[in-house]
Length: 391
Image 1 (cartoon, rainbow, N blue to C red):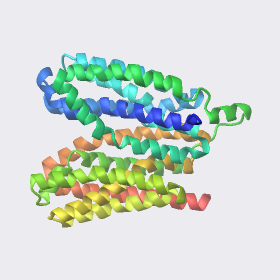
Image 2 (cartoon, rainbow, N blue to C red):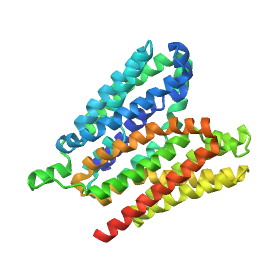
Image 3 (cartoon, rainbow, N blue to C red):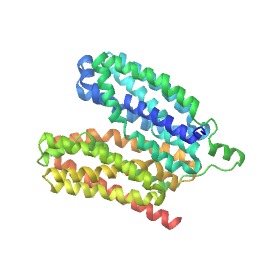
Image 4 (cartoon, rainbow, N blue to C red):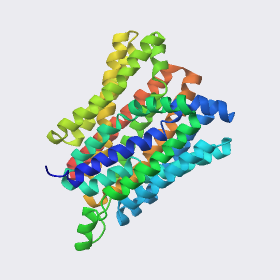
């Protein structure tokens, strides 16, 4: 039996480390938040501000990291990011108040910029070469299982040992699994970097109009999806569903998202990234129209399917569309720069939606999501037209 190829080994390794990385950091307070708040004497919103601080730091650090990825590749950055992630989790587990708690999440933001999502996608393209789009699809497909796997695991560890020991154990996992895996498996000399060193020339450029349109597309879409993540049950209830029915309908979103990722992965080689991206972007406003008009469980399920499938396809599109737009040698720089507006939109969305719902009601939040989803669709359509007209 032949040993697995470097691409297969890299995808398997990065799928594991991304599950650990996101599951033990950003998604941690979803389970441990109430216990953290009680133990630290902090209001729950302040505890939940930890992941927001992490995303803001990731956004601010991602742009300057682009040059580092181009010069040195993803491997050394991800190794350092794993180390910082382990230290950050230990500091969260040892926190005694708001200052030490938020400082720990700031460190986790530095770690995330070095090892979560964007660095992993860059690492895949360094190894996979022409098979990068398919390889990225597999990586993102695996990432869709993060909360499904880590929320029960976190709950079990917390029930047995408490939230502090659970957090510290994740720090040990980051140190003993993620860091050595990144060191051993990732490319020491990325294909693109090797090619450039043997054929020296000017660095490939990133077309500014394309970059702006792509950033607008993904940031506006990310604002909607991350803003809805914490408010969808309330919106279902505002549409007339009981709490039990709202929970049941909301549970279909995750299933539909994973199905959307799988659909795009299985058919990604048959159509352009623009085709799948435009179709998914059009499903978002359609799903909001359904939710605005419905007061039934069936309508809520239809919304969940449309919205979830669209979100799953767009999740893959975020990683793969830059490959179609920018030169291969500029992928790392473009992805790192795109991470800045994307993470800022992720961070801003939940408090913005919560504030709007508190002041103007759930339907106002739904109309905001509808309008921003149209902006995302228009930006992507403009980018497609620009790409067609200029080749």
